[in-house]
Image (tube, rainbow, N blue to C red):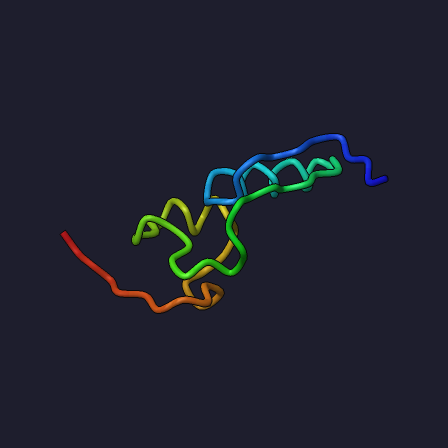
Length: 71
């Protein structure tokens, strides 16, 4: 039987970010989600600069098409 310290229910942006932060702290984490991965649309349709910085990635690391919008 699999035993982990933490179960994160929902593998969307918030759940995945939480799971990643816990793993970086050395915790054993299991993410449960009703959808299969990769999802057709992995987020709400936009990713801000703050998200890139929080995840420690660049737009080049993102595997989906990007459209930049300036306001």
